[in-house]
Structure formats: C-alpha cells, structure tokens
Image (spheres, rainbow, N blue to C red):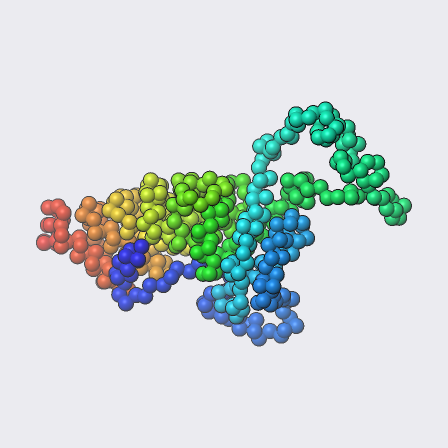
Length: 460
C-alpha cells in the first residue's frame, strides 16, 4: 500500500504527499479566501446580531455516558430525542473549530451499538407495505382462558380496549379522571410491543425515519475523528448497516444514504473488505461481492454527490492490496464509468474520477491496458490538462496516469497518435513539461514496432 503511494509521489518534482481530505466538511470550513473573509465578517459583527448558540461542557459525556446509552435504548421519544440532540452537539466539529473537546466514540462504551439499533429499528419497518409482516396466527391454546390467545383474547379485545389477564377486570384495570366534563382513560401499565412506544401510523413511521437520519448523521460525524476510525472500521455491524443503506438507495431516504456513503468514504483508507467473511458476528449477512455491488450502484447513480463519493471510495479501497480480488471482477465497469465522469462538466466529478484512476492505474498491467483501450480515455485526460482543471493537483494526476499507461509496451501504439499533443505540452506548459518529456522518451527510446523505430530515429 505504501509502495504504491511512494511510487506515485516520486514522479512529482519536489512534491509533498498530502493525506486526502475527508468529505462532507461544512461550507466555509476551508482555508480559501472566501471563507476567511466570511469568518472575518462574522468576528467583526456585534454579538447581539449572532443567533443563539449552545455549548456543551467537555465533561458532559463522561458524567452522562450511561444515561446517553440508556436513553437510546429506552425507545421513549423524549429520551431518544434528548440523546440524539446531545450526541449531535458532541460529535460535530468543523475543520478549524476552536473547540478541541469533541467527544470520541471510545469514551462512551456501547454507544455505537445503541446508535445502530436506532437505524435497525427504522430499517425493520421501512419495507413496502406489500412486504409487511402479516398478523401471526395464534394456534397454541386457541380456546384456553389461561393463555389469553384465540377466542378469549379476541373477546376481551373486541371492545377496542385491550386487556391482559392478571391485570384486573372491569374498572379495576382502568383509571378514569374528569377534566372539563370529558372522561379520559389510561392503562395502568405500559404496553411494550415490538415497535416500542412509537405509533404504527404514518406519523410514527416518519418519526422513526427522522431518528434514523439523525443517527446516521451522528455516525458520520464520528467517522471524521481519527480516534474513532479503528473502532468503526473493525465493527462489522456498523459497516453492514452502512452498506445496506447504500444498497437500498432507490427506496431509502436520500439523506440517510448520503450519510452512510460518506461514513464509508471516511473509513475507506483502513477498510478491509475481508471483514464480511470474518468470524465476527454478523447481523445483515453482507458479503464482499454484495458490498462492491452496492458501491457500483452508487457509481452509476445520476446524483452527483453519490457518484463522486463512490469514485473517491473506490480510489481509496484499491490502495489496500487485500481488496483487489473483490474489485478486479468489476474493473471493466469501473473504468468505463470513471472515463464517463471525466467528460462531465462538473469539476468535482472530474476530480473524483481522476483520483480513482490515479490509484487504479498502479494496480497491475491489466488495469493499465484496459484504461488505455477505453474509448476517449486519453483524449479526456489530455483535455483536463489543456483546459485546464482549476485544481493543479488534478492536472498533475492526469499527467501521471498517462505516464503509467506508456510504461506498457502494448499501449505505445495507441499513445503514439498523440505524440504531437504531448510535444506541444512540453514546450508550452512548464508545470508538466518534465512528465510529458518522460512520456515522449518512453515512446521513442524503446520502440515496440518498426513504425515506432522509424519515428524515433528519423522523426517521421
């Protein structure tokens, strides 16, 4: 893994390897002039013009860690809302935020499992209505008063007031109060069914969906913290839940899918797909092939944020050689889609696609041959350099991809057709002249055919 990165960085003259930034940072958190001007304007504004703010003390999580986990597990809407709000504040931290006390996941034992349970609760009821579970038929002790099932249960519940044996009968089990002439009845005990205390109507489903989306945002925030990466990338249930969410992107909430995808992108440098076949306990039975297919579904999506993130994810996954066997069968589809993304007018799509191709070109000879033989691949890489792309690093990677392609003798006949374009860049663009000079040297110094030899010796 390190060897590939060192080989790549060696081609840049005096270049310094920079760890790729994580996705999803809030707008204005960068170091550009626009964000600096905005922050200066905010600091100059009177304090009475700023909106309300809420600060959480850094020792809050240490003092209330058990309460936060129990609130998530309780199923009570008020407790769940309180815990999600607190965790959103504790987990959020901008890139240049002065607050250095963001709470890492490791400080709260059992928190990740409790958060995943909130998403699982929503996923359990997020099926289409035609796939919903039907009413279970009670056949054990159907006519027995002791079990409470069958005829006896239906008789007691036919009035609309559910009643359980042993609680009492008649008015003994119901408390009545008079308020403004209206009689209100409440049960003397709580009914704990499989859907907790959320209603089963559309309003209850919406509330559970909102809780799941808020939870996915918290998990995404946690994935930005280096202290949490190792914990999350080794947590099979966490990865299975995230991959299942992006797998069902056609029917799942878009914000939930986006949060799950960005979580995987943040963890990708440390992610080993073999975890899905390990001995760790599995809850969803996601396999390596199914995980890659879910990523391909994101890559083929028309949503820009999704296919850009998927391209970046593939580029990070392939750095780990252990992931190669699971990605190799999909390389023809990956190459074709990435070349298509380069032709898009969106600059971030071009950057994500070239970043992925930059790593894919270093995998093996077969990958370099497939990229070079992909239609319009060389033309579009050259176009990124000639336009040029506003980010110099993207142009540099495009040139490095071409240099990787020319290292294969089978590709030289394809690249010789662009010899004049390469020579033009050598004489007109000083930033990439060294790279294209090496490309021309490879094309002419070690010819692979008589035609190439004539070109190199006589300048034909």
